Image (cartoon, rainbow, N blue to C red):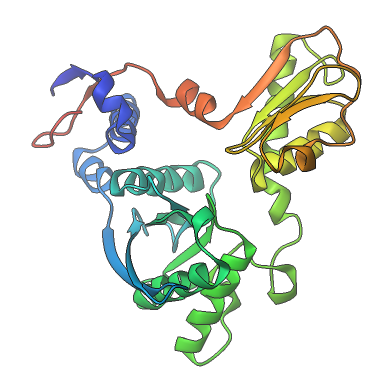
Length: 313
């Protein structure tokens, strides 16, 4: 077997970084080479070019992806993200991580992920709806409760899932609520799902401060990102006793200086300044930053060996 150090350039590519992690784990497990090869690549990769009528009367074509990494343990499962920097390699990596996450906690699903290259902040609700429905229609043969179950992710939410469910149901000629998770409660969504990821962040931080010898009340928190995950993490952590003193978003920053004084920039910053910000203790600050968490977890330099006949990353 070939052993090679992973380069920084390869680490920057999420798919190659994921492959390096997988090769390292497979090596340690002495995984059968045939199974190694099967799990190293996605089962299916779909690229879509989605024509959408824009509000100004023009026609725009967006590129979308859906990658199904594995269906060995059950239907594949994974979110859909809308962002201008979405790439196929990113979606591949996220789909494979979903496979490992489901397997680690023994949930009978495989891994999948989807995305569309667009800037949702510059699109109207009507444009987003038309794009989502067309994306769903193109995938109708490949998704479903027993095939592949999408979910919200970056820049998608309960409304996006409702559009997907409605479009899929129209094609099936019956209501199929199980085609997506993360739906609104009034059409079959699960209670607690909206807060689940943010609550998971708090659970991880709770375990971290135990190892650091800190307490909730003595810890100040700054959160990068104030979407569904960040906003719920901030609310839940504040209610649990953490001192949330800062929030960083794309267009706004909120940082406490005094007991109730905030400095901010951007139109939405004042709205984000929470009423539960209290006195600032002279204690360490916990910076909850998704990109830093990812770097901590994945930016390592392992030596890996690849199965025979498979390129090494």
